[in-house]
Length: 413
Image (tube, rainbow, N blue to C red; front, side, top):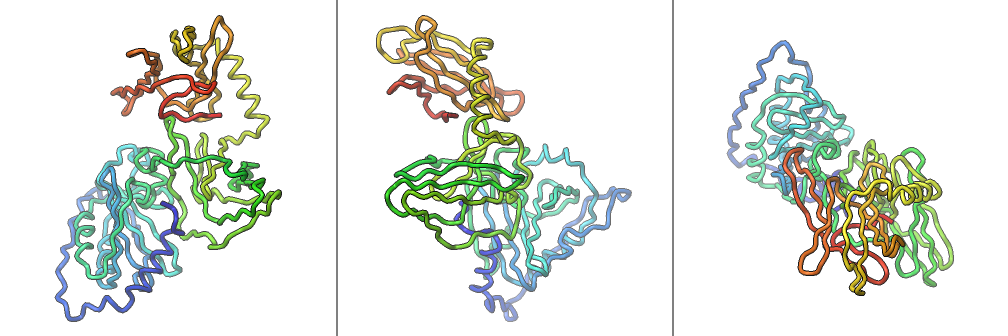
């Protein structure tokens, strides 16, 4: 998803490919009707143009649509048509809207991306009369943006792309605070160690994360500059959207010789202000996890041990099963684990009050119980999907190779 180096790179590529192809002097131009602006609250109207600094002379215009599942964006290089769209948006009578209205943001929603005279990108998102700018400013003005998105497909020099989430919509980093749809669930199978090479998280100084590659493979190991960020949300890892425009990574390879280590820096300001929680930086097929607030190894170890000692003080669920099939019944419990903005839980099996198995898992926030069906044990999680209605999940639990396994759940240790 983040293999390319940001929107600006693709804009430049499109301009190179299509410059000179947008001469429509011999083609009749359709008339675009100015949509009526229904914002009639004249007392709150402000003097502000959403695309005041847009420059169609040196950039394409990108129009986006997110339908709740997939994002489609269309890149148009047609200067007259681009200017017409910019003028229509700049003609809107805007009134300020309260930030709380973002909690009601709905789909389908739309986005606009265009460069200014200096080449910096302007991002707008639109839904049901609300306009969201990159700095979080929110305005109200009705606009038939769907018509312009549809018309974009008819332009001669339009390129179209798709993504299976809302993560590519402009200002998705802001919208993701309110709705998980603006992140993308990860299917990556990642580890911090493979083939003798280890990636370790060292420190976090403000927005700068320091990682370290250790190469014990016996061969040289090369890595690139690219990285991206994921966060644990309700027990699953999600790619989170970038908050900055005009960013990129150097297309170079770095070498770590056998038996040596090398530290690298990752600038997390790309993702804006990060909320408390558990994150991991993904690069070169490796991952390195950390928490905000940041905890070093000693602090994490202390937090872990304190949670282990407190396990018997609060039990979320308890049941007895032959969890490993050895003919002996184990007493199984779900108890709170250490938490920093996420839900973790110890899953423990005892025999005569002696711990036999124990693992720490990321779980969804909700209520927990055990169940048994056809001789197999399950963890049942009831969680709210909208603050009212409950969603029930069942995950098989069993013991294998000396540890407890929960199907489709992530270990937190």
